[in-house]
Image (cartoon, rainbow, N blue to C red; front, side, top):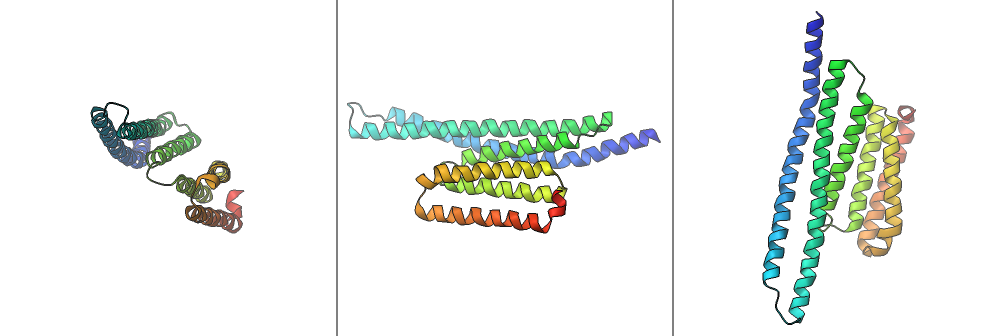
Length: 217
């Protein structure tokens, strides 16, 4: 009977580990895309280096400027790859902790939750860096606020105050960045769109808190 209980517990852990394993597959696909993009940047830089005209002409300055841009882009992609790799390691840690908890009969809920939150933050940061040159910076701030909103909703669903605290801290950082950085550097139209989006998300968080306040106690 005890052996059947142990087998049932392991089977349950395997079921729980299926979702993280699929997530690892998605992270692997993203790493493949990032390494492919990095290879294209490196190939382009090598081509430009061979085409640099001698004599300090205007064309040479343009090539050097593009090489500088490619260098910054390569650094960002490299950091994105690092963050996504950290995400994969954290997901592996989640799976390992799940099995250790089943074998040792320990309550690992908090550890698993914290590891998963760290993994999602690292993954989001990696994607944000990867998209840095494709979107306006303030749009990335809006995406970060949307992530804070999603975590706030998750805290209400799971009744976990840790998620709410992380969401509020992230929201505070995003608002600070929006005021101190994006307000001075962003185009007026994009700035208005971002402020409206952030305002709507904050109103949504306030409405959720007032409607389901008991879940946050």
